[in-house]
Amino acid sequence: MYALFSIAGGLSTGLIGFYLGLGLVAIVRGITGHDAYDEQVSITIGYVCGLIGWLMGIGMWGAWGREWFGLRTYWRKAPGWQRYFTFSPDHKVIGIQYLVTFIVVFLLAGLGAMLMRWELMESGMQLFNHDQYNAVMSLHGILMVAVAVAAVIGGLGNYFVPLMIGAEDMAFPRLNALTYWLVPPVAAMLLATPFLGGIEHGWTAYPPLSVVTDSSQILFGLAVITFGLTSILGGLNFIITIIYMRAPGMTWGRLPIFVWSMFVTSWMALLYTQGFAVALLMVLLDRIAGMSFFNAEAGGDPLLYQHVFWFYSHPAVYIMVLPGFGIALEVISHFSRKPLFAYRYAVGGLLGILGLGGVVWAHHMFTSGMPNYLHGPFLVATEAISIPTGLVFLAALGTIWMGRLWLRTPMLFGLAVIFNFACGGVTGIFLADVPTDIHLQDTYFVVAHFHYTIVGGEIFGLFAGIYYWFPKMTGRMYNEKLAQLHFWWMFISFNVTFFVMHWPGIQGMNRRIADYPESLENVNLFVSISAFLLGASFLVFIYNMIYSWIRGPVAEANPWAARTIEWQVSSPPPVENFPEPPVVRGHPYDYGVPGSVHAVFPGAATIPAGAGGGQ
Image (tube, rainbow, N blue to C red; front, top):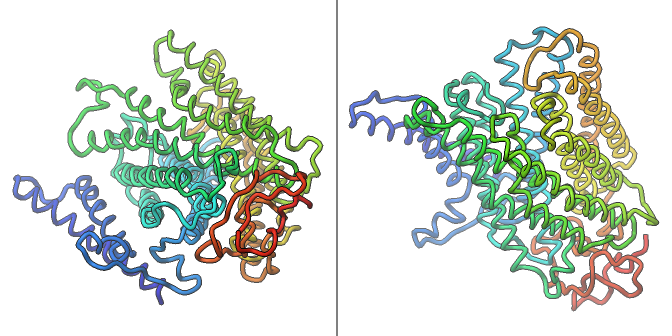
């Protein structure tokens, strides 16, 4: 089987590369008079060599590497479902690979959350000791961050951005395949951390703890640096694709709002992701090379890490949530059967977030000892970013107003994005202002706020996109009743869980701590039961998706009668995307405008379905 051959090839060459790396370290250390094996150095060099071997074995050698030596390249063309296990240049295959991978990672991270809430049902220690709880909490955090960063961008972005702009593929197909196949080693490294003592420092990896903990920190650092590389390369690919590969007539003023959100997100990924990678590289160098970036006794400064880390990690919040905004606005316009209200202002809001996102990082450090004269500027900058964010809300609310709302599952999730993020925005005001932040810092108020913005915004947006584009990706329709059951179950249990979680935060309950005062037992029991209900809602989603993909009713090419280009081809789309290059004639959201079409195929005899704007 092609799939088995591909995976086996990658694993075998990866192991060969890893052991070659170990041998290289042993030889060099032997020549220099050191012991042949040093755990941290050997793991680092072995991982780098193993990663190269994995990529070459999974298919990069035949598709790309041979070209470096003047040899003829080739692709492994696997039939049917097996193509999803090969190094494929097709952006649609890569999108499905990302989407399925990160749904699995999402479920694993959610299992970690369930284990944490089990432990927190009572005060004292029940299921874990303190170190084990820290390991589960940290692994849950970094896996969920990975899902939030890559699920929409890598999955739905890869699949639909080329289709929505009328392109045959991404600008760099082989680079696109490379960015996905860097992901499995990242997941493997993170899931291996419990076997080396677990991640004890939280997903933020603050020194000095991250410099002195077990060797699992090496796996964490290498995994996150690799994942950052996928984000940087993916962002570059999206930017070039959107600038240079738009169909004739696809001006910037006719670009679908989801594509705009991906364009802005890609710039943020390209500009800021280096910060996290550099911070963790400095941690690795402190650990394996004897450097002292964060050792105060040797002239280092632990606060340096926080500055570098948050210079990425606050823009990362927008890297996570902007694609969710784009999906929400995309869905709301199509299911309201109205032009997207204040389209240009919505685009301006996205660009405004890009401009301000990099100047607010230090509001995470109000309690870290930063000079008082810096509090005011960062407070003002943080509050100011609510202005461009408000333009996105204005566009959503104006589109809904007097619209012919079609309350199918994608629309429900799109509306939930706006509601949830509004709740997260209101609570964010307290954390942006110095006096209240000093009290609420590192409490469960922050946990509730963060989940309202990222899960409530980006993850709900992810599900809006999955339900919206599921017929296009699979050629099948899902069960609408089960989908709506999933929505209401998830929406209600999510809000009950995290709205109530603000209260123990106000009472001073620390996040990332395995125990708490007995006086908070009742509220924690309530939150845990709500969280278990939230986790159970995803079982409905998984059943619906798997059953519908296999046996669901055959979908029409355009079941939503939408106007954008991806709905004007068959479901699923052909390998080449379009029978001939489309020509864009009008705006993607001109519903109700007589005779308006978004795009046409010059050789086609009929106007594409949905062009007229009726429901």
